[in-house]
Length: 398
Ligand SMILES: Cc1cc2nc3c(=O)[nH]c(=O)nc-3n(C[C@H](O)[C@H](O)[C@H](O)COP(=O)(O)OP(=O)(O)OC[C@H]3O[C@@H](n4cnc5c(N)ncnc54)[C@H](O)[C@@H]3O)c2cc1C
Image 1: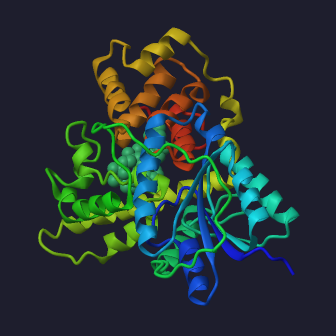
Image 2: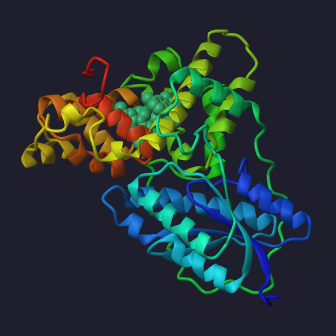
Image 3: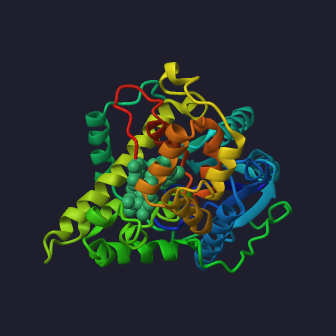
């Protein structure tokens, strides 16, 4: 019999919220039955050193962590935040310190780096005979070689939405033995009001302001989402919160569906359009879950050698110095605010691919680290669609 304390371990990744968080809810349930639990987030320095990550993204995450820490503190849960090259180093130290009965986390559809990290963590857990429970946080099925067709995914999405959100954790019991000492990351952030700020509280405020007022501004969401003048106000601006998990897609979709139709009745059209985009989000995540190689290879193999490279043109494009005023305005706006609406993103990619003949794989990292909402599942599908390297559809040039 081990003299180490028995705990349930919750590993947080891109799910930095208190509400609708199944692993935290499950750990809280086990605490209510007399168990003990530890929640940990690891800032993985090897990930943050990749060319797809940026200081601004980390600062958004740090703001989410500060908000989540405060929320967990209120139920008596001290969130353990550690820094290490990769998560398994911290998880292994916790497995040495405690008798961990189960590891709870969310299933993540990430890029090549996080996929390899997940495999290392699962290998460690197998070696230590530790059961792992990965909860869904999106309507994404794991282990499908072929992504489901649209109607099949739609029906999965409907079933998934019909299931309730996870209850908010209310009870927590920490072990009496302190966790091992880890280097904490710096959670201080620069004062910067040009990019979005992180945290669940702000995410819920945005959701409310969008569904209550902003989706009706000017000509309304459906009309204005592509506007260079009004898009930043008329769009939901929830993508960054959905990416880092300070808001769950299910909660956003439930909120949109729960709105009572009220005058002007056209408002339902805008909310339905928003709801449809949330479904697309998971559809793209599902595609990427099934075809993760699309981060590195063209979906259409015949397009592998379609594009080339020109360093000076890339430099001009990425710094907003091509001499084409609208292209440069969009890129400079992106470089400053870290967000663009769909149409402007598509146009920048079309211009780089078709006008400058640049290979999407080599300019993808600039966009990945500059978009605060870098979501690999959406990102690589869209890059390839707007570069004309997919199958089937007629190339779109925005
Ligand atoms: C080249 C390119 C790269 C992109 N990369 C990303 C990315 O890394 N991360 C990201 O979240 N979005 C990406 N998008 C999709 C889209 O541009 C953004 O989701 C949107 O602009 C975010 O702003 P919003 O939250 O106000 O969107 P809204 O218009 O309010 O949409 C609501 C939500 O629906 C989802 N959504 C919207 N449009 C799409 C779409 N076409 N496909 C899938 N889901 C969608 C997003 O989660 C978004 O937050 C990309 C688009 C292009 C053309």
